[in-house]
Length: 188
Image (cartoon, rainbow, N blue to C red):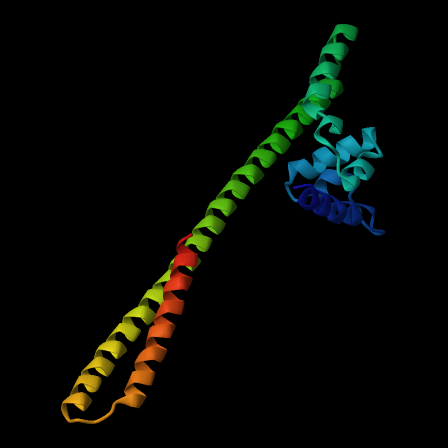
């Protein structure tokens, strides 16, 4: 998830800082991605945030932005008795961004769960195809054995020695046994 958010942030930041741009608001470059704007707001507060996320944080070291936001809101409400319109709008904007980012995280978790289910189904389909192929080969060998046994019986009835047919039969039986072993390994 971090790579995706960071990628969109880097693209928006490059567009924003490119020479010749006549827009002075970063939000015009995020293409409606609130989580990118949310990240930009946090990077103005905590410049080193990207260094920590690149290194891979442990869960205990992660920064809970929702808890910080609620504690800052409670502190600011006790300090200010009458907040200005710009402070109120800024707080509302940050709150909407936090909600949008939270929704984004939830959506990514749902997508990941769906992707895992799809992978599991694909693995099951693949295993089923392998088992079906082995069973099909076993059926083919069974038919060939039946034909070879008929030829052996006919050859003996004519008084001939069916040596090559016996060799074919032994070869088919060996192949059958190897397929049975393979099928057992697929079932386990």
